[in-house]
Length: 614
Ligand code: F6R
Image (cartoon, rainbow, N blue to C red; front, side, top):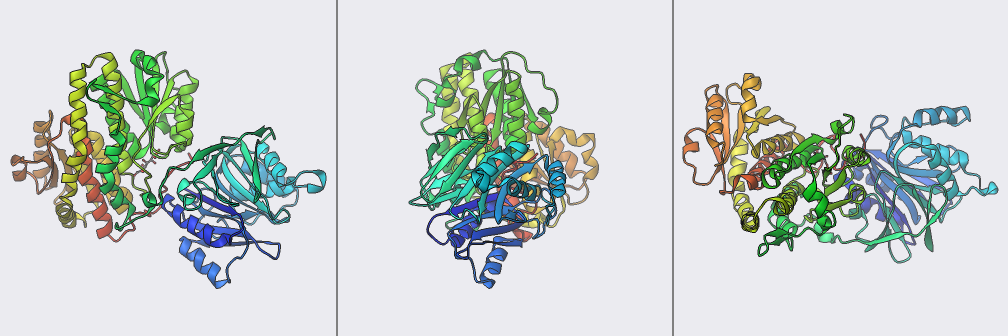
């Protein structure tokens, strides 16, 4: 989704801003822009449709910017098409105020009407320009309304979500930032500050950052900063250490972040488990949940909620919690849950699963359940993110930053954490220490087993080559591997743009079987498990209609070779943990399909890494 980077210090802002924009590219965007207060005292703006490289060429052609205070943005269109006029930064029409914004101003239409009545002339279709104009309308330094106060006053008038950074040529050494609902961090460098929507754009310059809460406004100068609320109540800033290493967000020897992150999974899962499995006691150690262990033991129902890939992990979590902890569960799209008038009885726990911790629908569902009295838990990757801060308790994935737009290592991390939460609750409810320790020992094997799957990458590529021209695919699985089938289909469609549907294998007979024609690729997750024989029957049904079966099967299964056109083998893993290995060939298959079709895997069309709007 949109990205923000801003700089105030003594260096030339332009190169820092462009470098920051490139680090934000992974979030998905369709235009970019930069505004710098130049030595001539004026705010200069440059914007371009398309990649940051286009903006860079435009700046170069114009001789570049020299100033040391500037703001920049990558835009993912919401209000108004993908045009240069709609790209950020936006300015007011009089005073040289420039603004970048992530989020949505919901009451922009009425504000726009009001501002037009005051004589303002708009040049874009965006909600953001309305905010720039409103700040300009309220700015009146002669009456004591400086940039900080004008921003506070404007934000008191708006509804919606925002992370903004504002500069003004009349106050060239000042930058004002604010947030509500969209993330924003202020990196503290030596005599300089770097503001960004994402820590990855800051870490090259700062190891400490100020985190903002909703309705916080920060005025920054080269000498220091002041934090307040929109009502101008002064606050003490919250400073956090940035734990990210530059190496974690760089590609290294890999051609794409997605591939890097697929290959990181053995190690990311080792980190995820590290120090959390006490096999001697048969207990899982999850510091974040200890305080609420009594409530969790007594809880009567768990509602898991998420979107996209995180929802598929949550669905596996539902099976795990029911199997291990014997607790009634339900799992639902956050976007549906929040508007359904859900019934939350006493003893309900809501568990939000999110890589970014910023997904608008997931956050809203969580808040809805909390307001109705549920205990709220988070399974989140990004430390300090909004959902992580909003929940009563939670468990971080600890799988490192996920840059690839198509989620891979976060998915396996989410499934691993949900397995540990299920064991945490199970042990305190019904499970014996021996049974729990047995599952832990199996979990510890998973990283090595994933390595074995990664070793088959060449074969996965060859199988993909055989079928990549086909435009419609099905992914089928049962039980724990029904969500894996959904995930395999999502991965394929989001980066290769091949139409793919995932569903429970048994559902195929109820309609979708009509789709199967000669050579249609149908991926079956057919590992050895309680429903293996049933899956074989479903495979026969596809074969007899001419479909080409690609089976993900357990090593040593010879029977499947006579039924499937192609077999992708995975090691033998207990059913409850099997998605952690069966998903890996599907991730690689999607990766190869996208490459073979000539797509940019890390910048899939129309997609954003973090969906912070409804
Ligand atoms: C797909 C993908 C998305 C996200 C979804 C939720 O590869 O990445 O489907 O899983 O947008 O995002 P988070 O986990 O950040 O809440």
